[in-house]
Image (cartoon, rainbow, N blue to C red):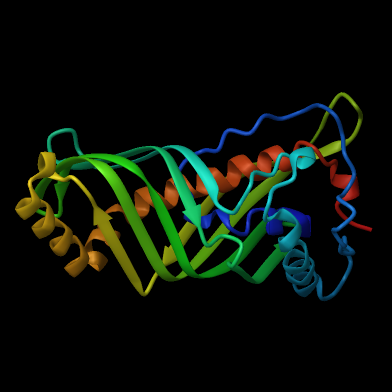
Length: 255
């Protein structure tokens, strides 16, 4: 696993929709601002973290050559969360969401098993904020909810654990490239603040009561929709990682 991949994805744990970056068939070498780790380094995990942290400032404004989007903020398209069944459930949709706080996230630790083709990253974000125009229908816990308007979701002290398994495949150019075959993400947070404007067609009394209910029961709400969000986040990590690894052959990942 390349340390620059970890750095590029450092701020994407709060994202809950595919970014959809285009791939390319042209092979690229490692960016000049990335210090590659040695695959036989006994302290490989520490090297990956150190290199990733050093590369973060170079990714804040994106890197068109390596298909890295702007992270300050990151614009996420077509964010969808669905929880429950057709008759009883919750559906949230945001066509465009802006995610703030990603450049400040900390890449805390890594576990790299090259022989087993398994990677684990642990990330921390003190504050991650998501804003955009939402559409929501369904039920929050036991209460019905509906509305369309501006939304703000703020997460405090977020801990993210992302794991994935990969394989190598040979392309027409004769080089090996990495492919993510499975992935999983879990997260925890000490507090979530939610503000949904214009709920219930602008009924201020119902809207304020629903916002109060959500914030008073933020942990239960997070537990209810958390697994769906985590699955969407994992897909984002996989999407970005796949596009990056499609550019740089495996042979350039280490020295």
